[in-house]
Amino acid sequence: MNSRGFTLLELLVAMAIFAVVGVMAFGGLIAVLNQQELAEAQADRWREVHSGMRVLTRDLQQLHPRPVRDALGDRHEAAVRALPGDGYALQLTRGGWTNPSGLPRATLQRVAYRIEDDRLVREYWPVLDRTLQTEPVIVDLFDGLDSLELRLLDWRGQWQTQWPPPDVPPETALHLAPRAVELTFEFQDMGRITRLLETGL
Image (cartoon, rainbow, N blue to C red; front, side, top):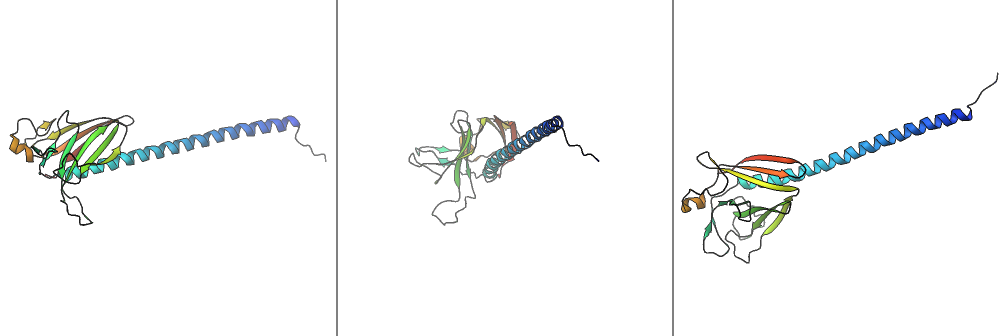
């Protein structure tokens, strides 16, 4: 019985088919790897933003009605301050500043938020009533931010775009805190995100 092998043409056709299948499989593998890398980058991005939101939420939930003296020491600033053109989107006094080392300092802390380039920056000072020489500690929370808009809910149930509200007497305004704060973030990559946070007062 005669045995018949593959002809050269059959071998070439088989090799061509194998090469096409291999290229398709490799392309599929590259696509899967790219999707995995993209998913990991997006997850890292969400974790970064979520971490920054958690810091902001904690500050607002621990609001304290204690006003502070300004850097020149000649007037007081409200416990919560959000004024257009102020340089800071939001300033506030918060409680609950842990002191595990037992340092001689208060458990209250003055913090402020601002946008620098495309980054949301949190600043805090080692003392409440700072001077011009008191340097803040600066922490970047997340980047890729185009804008931040705030609305603050007053005791009458009305939303304010600045705080203290302009119709409040100065003495009352120093200690006044909003019931809630609505923050609208405009991100370059994630679009518009709004958070409504209830304060601790």
